[in-house]
Length: 111
Image 1 (cartoon, one colour):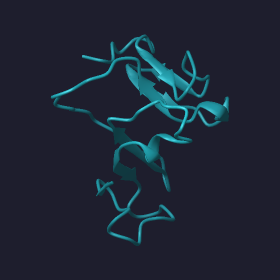
Image 2 (image 1 turned 90 degrees about the vertical axis):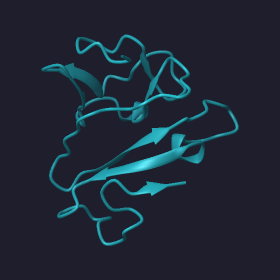
Image 3 (image 1 turned 60 degrees about the vertical axis):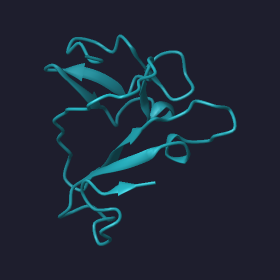
Image 4 (image 1 turned 45 degrees about the vertical axis):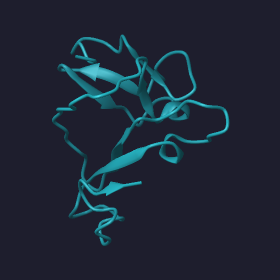
């Protein structure tokens, strides 16, 4: 298990040593707090994993647009997580601005 349900031990923000303040744990869930530090938008595990099965539950705010990116590489030659791995789209399929395209719709898998 990579999330202990209590804190962000084992996690950090993309190309940072620790998790940015916008990532919090509340009620046993990892949550994104838009009111804080926008410099650390992508949360990354400290570990590198192979041959894994990912199980999760998610919620998205009204109009929200996010995603889960697999097998990223924190290399200086990349400017963003989405440049390094495949993404499973997580968004509000009803109210999100990017909901009209099946490639970017809920749970779409893009490379």
